Image (cartoon, rainbow, N blue to C red; front, side):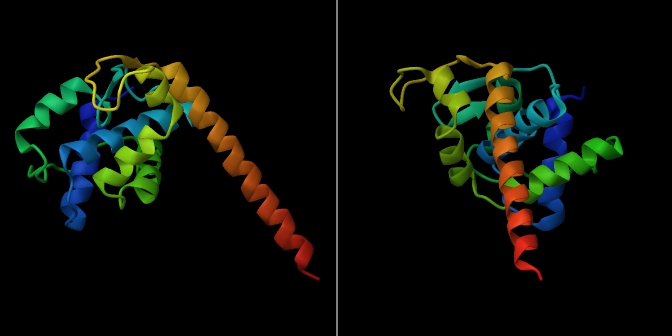
Length: 166
């Protein structure tokens, strides 16, 4: 396992390298998706800390507090590229390939439509504060099911296209 701060540092480093806008809100969602997909695909957490179902989506309170002073502005912090094992670095690059180019609001809307955040929030109004935990089991089940759907779609597309080839 790694620290959520090591995962965050990878995305901060990437933002610095690419000249991208990375707010605390966007960082939270990127770290969330890294944890969620790691649970689904590797069947283990990247880190122990739990996300809470805040108004604007999943949040790790300790990570939020570290970057709270930036508010909605970009996180300006010189971060060296974290030393991660090659498998983890490849995994985080794949997460970045899918989610990094979305803005914070898009990522927030995505998490609001997904079961783990919705289950943790229950019947709370959208604007009601909450510190309820988004359970890792919910994340694992939800994203694993979506990984299977994607895999089935890819297999279908491959078999479909191969049937078109003479």
